[in-house]
Length: 358
Ligand SMILES: CC(=O)SCCNC(=O)CCNC(=O)[C@H](O)C(C)(C)COP(=O)(O)OP(=O)(O)OC[C@H]1O[C@@H](n2cnc3c(N)ncnc32)[C@H](O)[C@@H]1OP(=O)(O)O
Ligand SMILES: N[C@@H](CCO)C(=O)O
Image 1 (cartoon, helix red, strand yellow):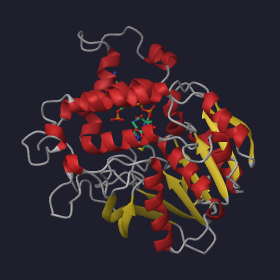
Image 2 (cartoon, protein in one colour; image 1 turned 30 degrees about the vertical axis):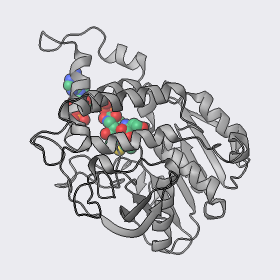
Image 3 (cartoon, rainbow, N blue to C red; image 1 turned 180 degrees about the vertical axis):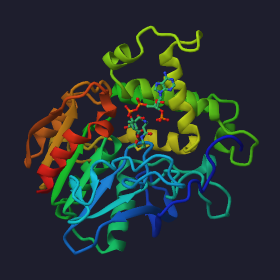
């Protein structure tokens, strides 16, 4: 496969934990699971903070850009010595998600026969992903997190942690996330997955030895996603009807840039597995409904949303704020940038994180 992401890319200061087999919600067993992770600060027993990334994030939460990382850590503005998530005080752990492609077991990993899983990789749920993270916490000797923090898909996992393992989560920060995947969220994600599958280079998911992977499909899926990550007003104000290079609209060029950037660092099969895991998200499933599930959370909680987020609208975070006893209302981050505000509005998000951690 040429011109795009390859298994094993990129190298980095990651560590790897073998967490054994994971019994999945669908009855299958995923053997020999590995989670890649990075840590910052010193472990002092009760100071662990787990930070969970979103769909296409990775374990590189903090740190400057370097040879292995063309961009700084995705929350570098928030995480570091003296920053909102102060690595002078806290032992911060950021794992790569189960099913991902940045070091954790995913569709590009070897199956028991030593070949890439490809189309045979099992479908996952958010709860399966959290099960693997629980094993990582066990391996690191962390019985109870001082805090579990996540935005977007990371917020889904943070919620599942607090619901399924309340005694292990002292504080919880859920940002731009939801108690269940809504019809619109499912529609957008499912369409993106189908766009990838429609790429003739997808080969049913078994493309790792092919000359080309489904680069065009992944690129288009990312463009569709990226529209939903930003606000209508922002696109209007930044690009309007401007043309670029006397040809295409500037907004087309912007989306093409983001599509091209993702295919260099992400695996299409992982994109599908992770998107479908997000679509499985429903904290109420098998627990007597959403209200009953949220009532299990004992953590002191901050729930926040972004006022211009059309993908994860504030109404979903309001359900969380109303249902979690330890939440003190809903905090609203003001941003022009829509859903991606959780990555961009470092100052406001940092204030919220600080309030929770202090
Ligand atoms: C949790 C995680 O997801 S971690 C992984 C990191 N996150 C992502 O990859 C998500 C996708 N990326 C993004 O959503 C955003 O880039 C963010 C959230 C990381 C940053 O947002 P912003 O700072 O607002 O950046 P913005 O969306 O404006 O994009 C800027 C890029 O677009 C490019 N760009 C802007 N206008 C145009 C245009 N008309 N034509 C082509 N490219 C353009 C810029 O050159 C810049 O490129 P660079 O990122 O390669 O330097
Ligand atoms: N930009 C984020 C959005 C999904 O929440 C990502 O790609 O992970």
